[in-house]
Length: 363
Image (cartoon, rainbow, N blue to C red; front, side):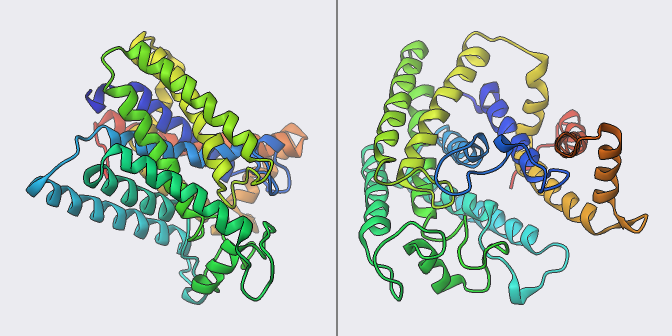
């Protein structure tokens, strides 16, 4: 099946990117509606679904390419390595922009994790069979659970899942001390060790794509996706009792829970847009965002930084706009939400221009 004809994949990607921009750019972090915030620690809010949905979608896109062998595999491997490197470097640029203070430069990040997950699943797609991928995924999930729940944390004591004293936090400090998430400085939500189970999120996307896109009977493939998705959710809820669903730790239960929801959500989009061929004006903006997803995300990061530092009326562009919305609506939370919606719309305009000119920037 031709990727260009998969409207559902572009819409799924675009929805995810638009949601990423929305939750990353409120008018004020002090006034954000609860569903637009990550869970404080254990648990899962709608916002916690966004990043795993994107990794899942990356896996689905990977599944569309036919596994290569011989010389072709060497060529595609170079492309995979290049693309991963470019994604990682763009992520580093966004982390440092605009000041690039190397002494406290954050190394992990959203694009960096996407780069590493893409590298792992794309190479596996071309080098190992599907059954081996499933085994690797199982080993990563169970192995991560054992490490986090049973292996003592050096210098701290018994295994635990607390923010600063869990094994993943210790591991990240070992290699990334001084270069982690600025709000904690002692652990990172996109850290090294927790990227391993994130690879399985991507593999679930690869598996779903293979099962759905290669099925002669699309209705049967969809039925299998819905059944498997709900089985994963059930297993995750059971696992949650001993290894809690947690986005920051990217726990194994979180992988299965969000993967199951992603299967159900994408299955509905695929049925509506690619099987029934329904067309809705509402989906068009997300199709546009999905056509240049990484560009939209990078643009939002640059604009958000600039809005925060460019002076305007003894303040910044960001603050002046937000204060103006507060004066109009008289509600701090609603003003913060309207600012976020407006910021998404602002990011949409240049991406729409690229779409109209048929310019699709591939990293």
